[in-house]
Length: 450
Ligand code: PLP
Image (cartoon, rainbow, N blue to C red; front, side, top):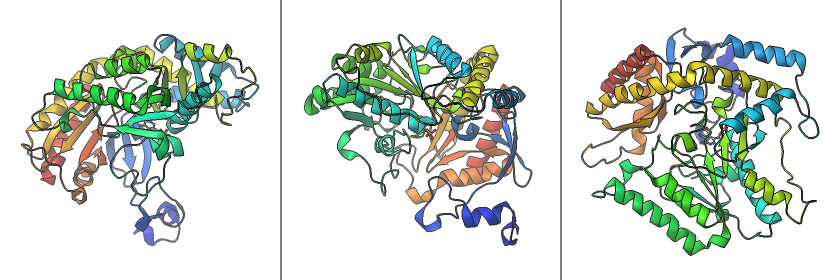
């Protein structure tokens, strides 16, 4: 076996490589699937088996693998200017990308602060909120509202917002800064309650929390328009605009975390306004901005906020925050070319194929193990249950997601297993025929698991 050899990738990895999110008992020695190459919507594993890249890497390879245009632009930018300090210099690609993102962002979200990924984008938005409230003389207005099912990152503050079961069990966090609300998950609403009544309950809980904790102590609400890693949770209709309104009434900054939903995942560059009808105060993004070809993220910030800072009495107050790789010229150049590809037909394709993807996946609901298939655009989740009638969840150690993934792998599909769920977010270039292939494999993989 490869692992018995005293060299090679497996040997090296088992001794030296720690993967993200390892378990204590197998730290440094997690099971990992070697991936050799990628092309379009496919990747090839260590044994040369071609697989549909079901999660598009980590919801990020939006325009697909092996795009020559993106490889070329990285090379050309590196040969022109490989790096410049973002502190007191700027590159042409960073300025152009800022302008193009502002043109796509809703309302007056005309400014961008570039980061290195999604966690650093959320961290930046939160630190900006703290700075903003300090400068305008509201230092007590710092609490952050988040929700069950949320995932916002792996830096200390962003991770403190995470609300998925198990994520925080063994990890510390800034708990005194965060207030958690109910996940807007219609599938998990109380038995006998209509979706409309559930929506009213969520809005009332939000309003009551603001009253109880005090609007003068709450700085921001952070929410994904569709909770991605929580299991592609699409909130009840009307929920997001109602929460937006309460934030506006109470001077609470609304931070829309679009690390997953932006750059075509739901057919638009940003989904907050174009899909869900809300204009946030800040939008965080990453992943699809470069289709995963280069680590880059950022925060779109409303001019209303920058105006408050500019006109404050504290001109010398410094936002002491920034990364060596903020506005990286190679990342920004890749993002510009990636936007060209999206605007040049891939967004339109995603809008066309998205409903078909949802409709085909929905047919899996006739399988006894499947409790619900849900999603938006080109992101979806198959949630398995112990009992369809009661919606009772499977035991945590059932690991049904992993078992389905193993069968699907043999059949030619990589799944992102999340305990009792399989999450799908393929490259946006997927065709109808490839959707059919994916659904056929999933059907077979789930059937073999039952
Ligand atoms: N926010 C959301 C909604 C995410 O899904 C993720 C990652 O999956 C993050 C933030 C963190 O991004 P990153 O892993 O790039 O730091």
